[in-house]
Image 1 (spheres, rainbow, N blue to C red):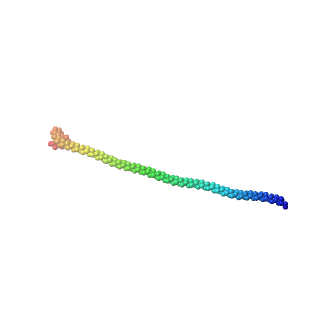
Image 2 (cartoon, rainbow, N blue to C red):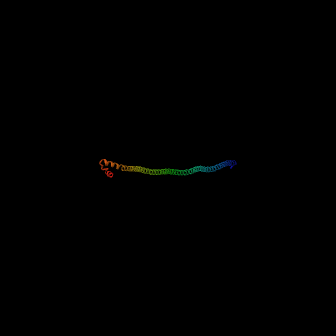
Image 3 (tube, rainbow, N blue to C red):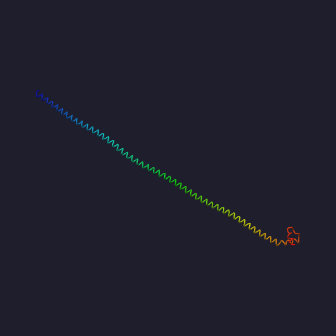
Length: 197
């Protein structure tokens, strides 16, 4: 083989080798790029996972805040419920107190009425006693007046009787003697005429 041909062949081979070397270099670069791309893809996947985790964490964090708010609201609701129960108890106590106060007022009114009724009853009894005493006194006064009238009548009768008897005893013999001498003695004066003769 001539030297020129051999040299051309070697030159061609060298060009081809350079091409292959560049291709290899390019392939290495592409391989490195592919490796880096896979790394970046893995990183992107991991980043997406982290992003998803971050999103989930933010959701969990918001949920936790909401849960704390709900927990605080529940505690406040329990406090309000306890306060409402205590308020209902106090309201029931106030109602019972008002009922007892009303009963006590009614009792005091009834007691006052009973006392007033007893006073009136005592007054009525005393009034009836006084009325009975007054009636008895009026009866006694009437009896006393009647007795005084009878006593006065009896005294008057005794006075008349004594006066008449005295007058008759003094006057009857004189009249009898006069009648017996002057006229016929009447039947009423006959004893006197007998006594006078």
